[in-house]
Amino acid sequence: MTPPTPPKHPVHHQSEAPRDLVGIGIGPSNLSLAALAHPLAELDTVFYEQHPAFDWHPGLLLDGATLQVPFLADLVTLADPASPWTFLNYLKTRERLFPFYFAERFHIHRAEYAAYCRWVSDSLPGLHFGHQVDAVRWNPERDVFEVDYTQLDTDGEAEALGRTYTKNIALGIGTAPHIPEPMRPLAEAPGVPVIHAADYLRHRESFLTADHITVIGSGQSGAEVFLDLLRNRPVGHEKIHWLARTEAFAPMEYSKLGLEHFTPDYTRYFHALPEPVRDRLVPAQWQLHKGIDADTIAAIHDELYRRTLDGGWPETVLTPGVLVRTAGRIGSTKIELHLEHVQQASRSRITTDAVVLATGYRDRPLDRILAGLDPYMRRDASERPRIDDRHRLVLDPSVTGSVYVQNAETHTHGVGTPDLGLTAWRSASILNSLTGKDSYPLPSRTAFTSFGLTPQPQIPPARQPKTLTPLVAD
Image (cartoon, rainbow, N blue to C red):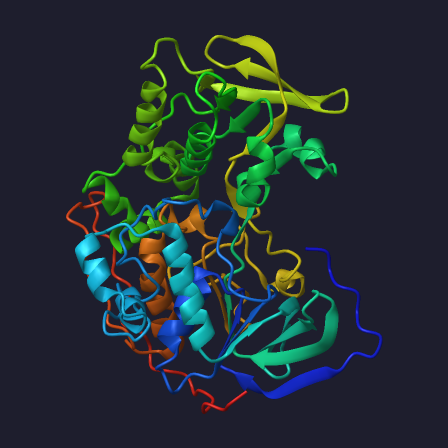
């Protein structure tokens, strides 16, 4: 988002009393943290989000698309099933418990998860939407963080400036759509039909009318976009290419023991590994979190098979193992993709009318927000922030506060980092660390698998709490 123009006559709101926690960003991770912090009366918390309301992957809320984790992976249940913010309590407030019971759904619709999160965000106090955090600094004289923000109006323009002081911070700014370098000039050019899958629903109707469409990316999003396009194109005139860098359109690992890679036990094991080993493991484990669920693969095959019933084959091309080397325009309407097949060491090109990039997401850079903390931050050999086993940035010992990191620590905590199934556990771990006690008792063991020959030490019980600020209404 382009930084807003400062207001002509800014009003500077300043809260002098330091809070216990300021959350930056309100996605599922920090929304979980806010929900679990809500009953802890000793904590004074506030959360800021630049968007005007909670918004979770709106471009991918396709009809029938489901979460890839069970409904128990809501914001709170795996840490506190008695919380008022559970998905089941959401259904109860909507008088939908019996329909859900008879539906026998373990994996809920993605749109329903988004609606549940909106319900929580609309109900919780202390969530400030339309507030863009601009900078974070450490104030050594007061032993607090300074958080500067801009309050935005309904048009996203600056309305007022403010500053909050806090003892601790929770970063939950999420990820951003990744545009591969060869496609970036086209994706950034106005009017060119090259979009990221994150914007698919907004452009869906115009893309369905394109003569030829190319989908790039072999993960769940690419599969869902391909299936949606296929179902809505006429038989015999589908004209869809589906290209992927991976060597196969592969299913996601969903065996019972394979799923134990998304447990706190594996997270502790991964964090204790040497940095070079961690860096080799993450890309090698792509099928744990970047594959396609079996139901979607089956639905794609069924749809393709149905189109052969009258003879002939659907006009589709599905090719894995392909890199897009370069891309450009032909005339005013066509797009040309220059391809390379790695295994064959061959090259080719295709002409298409529209491109959907299902090329995943990357961590949003922390440098802009945390520029003021750069002198205090400790980094690894690849210049990434070091993050300890309590999800805190490793800072200079002179900084007495903590900066907790949510869903930006894959390099230190493994493939489970973005998984919704670990969201409540991570939030509870942060709150236990913050309060210095087991506000949320967590299990000592979560997997049947013993990762490694040397047992990993458990995170010790939380220390005695620091002196916390009494809860004061904002």
